[in-house]
Image (cartoon, rainbow, N blue to C red; front, side, top):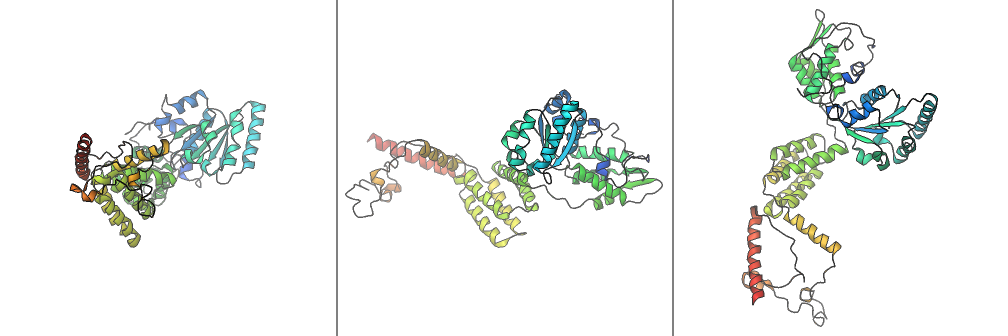
Length: 451
């Protein structure tokens, strides 16, 4: 089991107690099991272990603004509450969904008053900070700057895209990760053993296969895992003072999983998809394809990305890849889902296993850089258009050698006016033949210069 900052004291314990609890039955299990202190907080050791920046900032009580970024059910809100308790700060919770600028100003005014009267600090916690617009976020800046408030924001969206620069620059940014299967197992075992979890159900016993099933199907979301356990216990008959949750009960207590697939999921998954094809790993590429399809990603978007990849990362190492990708793009438009998955899979596996070259991509970017930054070359006179009346008097086309009139359909002549080298074919796939051809022409040019 992966080391956590707050380990379960008795990992072998899987039976609960019938001791009473101060929590009412109407409080959801996730609420009853909210960690009372850092010693109960499970996971996120990458930011909370001793010596880590966040842990040092909390222990030293030296921070002005923090932003937590991560998937649902990873403990962002509770972590903010625990920080407030650790630093003896007043805790005010607002929401990016329903709170207004007036709400923010009101809480800031009360924080200023609290600071003047008692010297106590105030943490203003804003859940879903990504839903605040620029003007709403701007309101926080002066009072963070002068120390009137401490700010903690939480979001499931990448703050670099949704939080204004001035607020980001004043904040410590920490990314919370989905809990591991082992973390979820630890949480479920602790819950089953806790006297406040199911005070009216006697012993609660999670069978090993049920425990593993819930931990794996919860997708790293602690709230989802606890909700499933609560349903499983509530729908399992008690017998002899014991409630035994087996695999069947666990399977019936959790819904078909949905994927967190907002903007971050969209960009991160397509990035992993492209990099898997580039890395010639068809299995990984198929996995990320499957994730996108399951999440309802636009199949035309996927096909367009495969088409771009076929030129950018395969290019002339296998010219057939572009034809395959374009055919797939056209086919998915006609066929649609669910059969389009088969067409996409064929294109993906072909591209992932094709020889790779980005020579064309690098070549055009190098040429564009020259066009943008260097003096633009004039078209040599012998290459200029000579098909209109009067072009001959201007000398356009004079001296041009028609390659098809020469042996091998190759003519030695200048086509740009300066010496440039943009296209460097890779020594792989069909580009190996292209490289050999270019070397042969280079020899012919060198011989012509000697004459």
